[in-house]
Amino acid sequence: MNILDQIIERKKIEVKKAKAEVSLTELMDSEFFRKKGISLKKSLVEKSGIIAEFKRQSPSKGIINDQSDVLEVVKNYEKFGASAVSILTDKQFFGGSLDDILRVRKSIEIPILRKDFMIDEYQFYEAKSFGADVILLIAANLSVAQVEDFTALSHQMGLEVLLEIHDEKELKHINKDVDFVGINNRNLKDFKVDLDHSINLKNQLPEGILKIAESGIYSVEDFKFLKEKGFDGFLMGEYFMKNENPGKIFEEFVINVII
Ligand SMILES: O=P(O)(O)OC[C@@H](O)[C@@H](O)c1c[nH]c2ccccc12
Image 1 (spheres, rainbow, N blue to C red):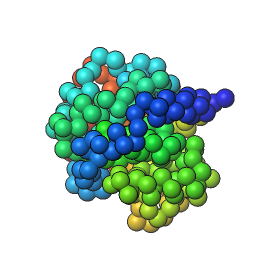
Image 2: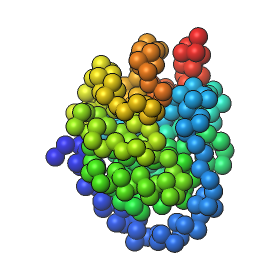
Image 3: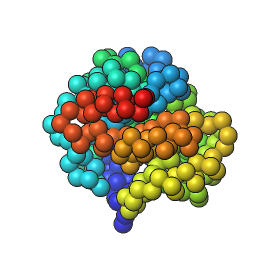
Image 4: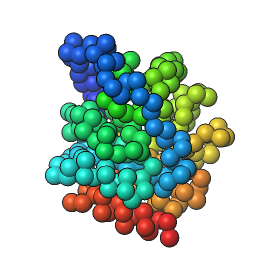
């Protein structure tokens, strides 16, 4: 079984457990459930375009940073111009939790992307109730019909949708309602990173859709290359998180790419 399949198997068990512990009605009782979300569409064009990620560990890299405090890091991401923050909420493989979102929600005003493996409607209620504004759908583990249904459900709740694809056969998952298409430069099955492959795929996207380059952006040159090729947004995690002070590295990076 590849790692993505392992994650999904585990996720099914987690969702089942969460459902037994907290009902949908309880989730819908949250103050955030009734609040309007903060739009990434707007902030993507108005700010740096960078969606800066908080990620403690990953299956491909092991521990990346288990010392930094989520609140301190995302406040700095916001302060120095991030368009949004991405927070990994998978515990088993990425060391995160929904509580990380809850903890920071009231302290920042930029959108929060709940980064997880969405397979069940319940998780969308969770995302909204813990204060997320955007959710990720990964084409590699969803059917075309699931992407459509989950997009409709997200919009009903006021969540924006980032659909992640990695190869040509996933182009069919794109529908006119998704808010952003992300191209993952990293293959989630073998972890290989290839920026040229992403440019190739980007050229096959429908016109007018907001395009986000994801993963493996490890230098100012990588960023500038992808920007020049027409990406509107840039999802970056490890480059910042592998340092003791991710917010400081973010600040330096933004200064370098803006000049
Ligand atoms: O740390 P990186 O290489 O900058 O990548 C960030 C982000 O794109 C990556 O964490 C990611 C992209 N898609 C995912 C899906 C699941 C988990 C993680 C991801």
